[in-house]
Length: 321
Ligand SMILES: Cc1cc2nc3c(=O)[nH]c(=O)nc-3n(C[C@H](O)[C@H](O)[C@H](O)COP(=O)(O)O)c2cc1C
Image (cartoon, rainbow, N blue to C red):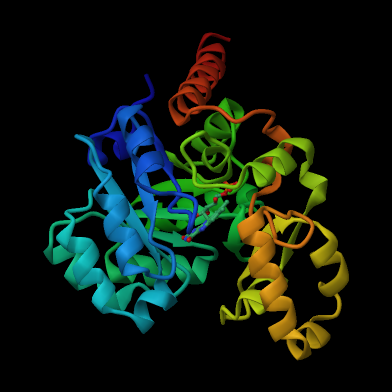
């Protein structure tokens, strides 16, 4: 058993939260993670009302939370009323200042989890009243910034211990097994947020070809890029790129983004068709460097148990030696 302030605060058994991955983390995955003793989050992403409600309606008896991309929530602030009406066990915000939304979340009595990518973001999250801060390193799958997990986490831990010791810290980015969890605890985190490893689960909403591609590739085969956002016509703030598997599409356009913008309409149609068909050479597979540690697709419960067993073993060895 690994008990930390995170397990106590969220009233969960294990210090593991599953990431609110847009399009991939639905109610089934969130349920499975919470049932296994972690905290599952629905990936509210860019805020599709019908999709989010459908996913909440899959909830069983377990507490699950929800995430939204903060700048997308700013464009659709009414989504917060909708999400809070589903009584989430936590609300997760990432990728812009959470301040405009924190009062409403906190007055609903819902824990606020803020994911940060820098010390600057950490200060904003603390000022907004975050209960939990997730320090996300660039190894992460999906969107993020450029700081590595290994330095960012202890730096944020030091900042919190000096300025906001009541705030609980989690680590994210590159954590896919018990070694990652144990290392995160050594760096000063009290839990982890895991995306890619749960993306590679039977409950995640992912095309089987993308799962297969992730199993076959290594961390060397990933890249941070913006080409998929240009192709999808999603206007992400420039500092955030997404980690995906390299493929024909990144090879063609990553170094030629001005030309991609010129050809956006044709390429967008091709990309969307490829996403629906699971054509992994055109559509991008969103997964982190940890893809090199993923060798199978397992139920989320098995993934979580394996991570816990390995971390507990490592931490026990440390205690006795
Ligand atoms: C497929 C995928 C989709 C993601 N979508 C989101 C998202 O919608 N909102 C968000 O805050 N983070 C998103 N992330 C990033 C996660 O919150 C988290 O930081 C990341 O998965 C942690 O690194 P890991 O993938 O190495 O576990 C996504 C990650 C993946 C792999």
